[in-house]
Length: 203
Image 1 (cartoon, rainbow, N blue to C red):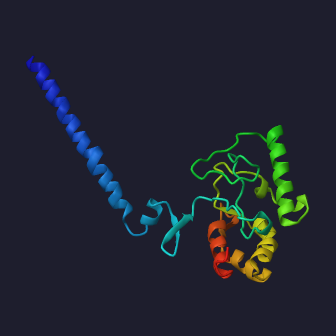
Image 2: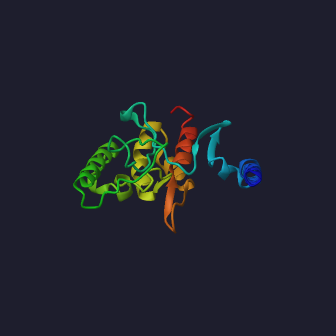
Image 3: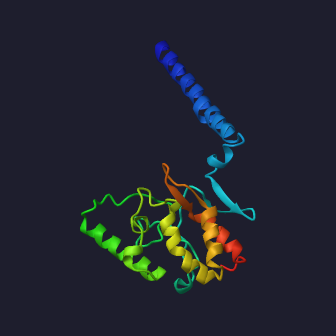
């Protein structure tokens, strides 16, 4: 009986110590480290704010949905593999790839549908639509697109916002950075915010 009491007390002490260490001290240490200047933004989700309000994350691409598709003033992200429609938008709370190979009939059909829809939206021939416009990434939440896909959308955005084409091109250049390993890419969220500001916030 004495041995049982000792073992029980030893177990309770271990439980108490581990609860304090892992349930209180460790979370507090992580929280404190996340408050270090330069790390706080990353710890809070790399939020992009405008007028003091969060409008998105610099790490997560969410395709904008125009109120009137015929007067679409936005630059668009890559499609999401999990979206119900060919072009989306996807659900930013979930991510994932289709896991379909390049010879999968469903994937080929989806890519063809995306290419036709984008060509119609941008008023170009299907062979002018760049690959990243019709293929989803592994996450489906890429925040950036290729310069070629951004350039394809400039004429439509300029037409529907009333901004000069040269001004929209300038905004694209200002929001072009390295999207991957040595690959220039255009950050869609800050670009759309810049377009809205330049157009007087009408969209």
